[in-house]
Length: 423
Image (tube, rainbow, N blue to C red; front, side, top):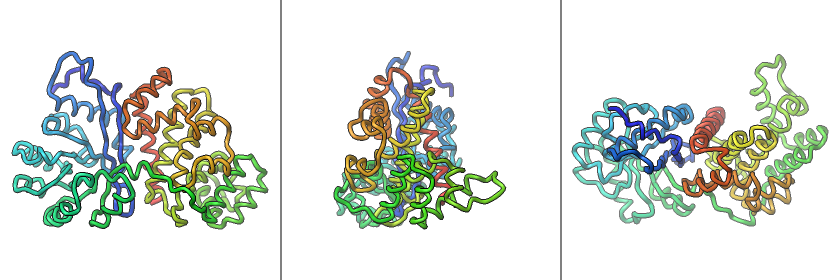
């Protein structure tokens, strides 16, 4: 089927993502959200063609499959887009077609799903509220089923989960917005979760920092102050676990060296202060409740790493001649989530970690170029297309939606590489 040229909309596409996690909070996949304008088109056409065209272009031109690694991309489809020939251009092993349960009983949709299933595609029934005989064919085929926590009381969820156990789909608790939602879903027996709770953690003020976190902050402060190497080495020696991890990290990064790195002094020389500072900042997210949790099991740590890398890429595209701004942008994205990680207000954190005035203004009051990039990052990652559009306008056209989506894909791939190394 030929796709009309007016549907080449990648330059106007906003691409969002929301993590789907298992009961250990390991990443299973991302819900991908495609937002393309329907304005300025020469002529109307079947909506299914437009949707399928946008989705396939995003995968082909942005390289989303490589960015996702072993994780699945959950792509929302309707009956029309599912029926479009172009949807078969998507990689069967990389996507899950997310289909509303309200249309899944249509015999034509069932037949199409069965045909796609024979080609290796998998499905998720979205917004499932009851099990009916008409849904039975897809309940035997689908891999997942999403149940909306906000719309379904426990009295409906419990029997629905019990009924689902007789079929194939694994239930996902969707619209998990708060910690109470997460605890409720876990108590009901869900093992897969999706919602803004994992992307926008709340801050619990007044938390005491554990000794390991205090040691990290001392090292970060020391590096920020450009302390002498002797002082950095002294603090590392008081943190045995950090020293072991530093040496492991350095030997992994310095594959080409003939001799192994055996001291903190050598490690600092090989990695450089900038890289060590980034690593230490990221480690602040790995100790919720005083217990070490690696990035592969820590959605907050993954989000912090993503935001730092994403903001760095944005800064390089907007100001390619200012390498210092890119470094500050990485730290800005990384540090923006520290209140949630440490349970302290940002003002109190910045009293302990001295930073430059530009970064300080961005984190406290969203001022300056870094503040604008942080606003853009938050709007984009929260699927706020209007907010992202405003920030793009304020940036004066130095970056467009297509570049924004490319940065997203590259940052997702970078975080995926971190989780693969940690697994």
